[in-house]
Length: 125
Image (cartoon, rainbow, N blue to C red; front, top):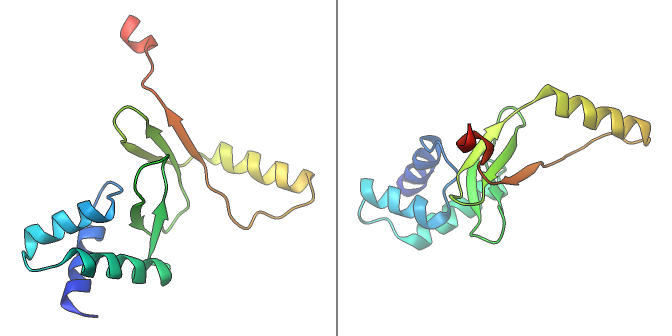
């Protein structure tokens, strides 16, 4: 593992959001001004190929990344701000498992992304 790759890995490890490659590069450049965007792109692609990071396409924006999660989780995306909120709800897991079983399938993978606007009801109260 090269030092630039270590730096990209550290940026991803310390990210509490889902940055795109340009944001990862900006953060890495803040630590090492000599790191190139090409190095960041190659490192992120390598980490993705090794299944160390997960690439997300939330709508039509750029691909965004996160470390491969230890536990599966879902995403709610605020369409106004682009903020991504991770959540896990065992009720959703149970519904999916029940539906797959009823239809005669075993779930091997799934992805739930909810695109939402902030509720206007809370502003009226």
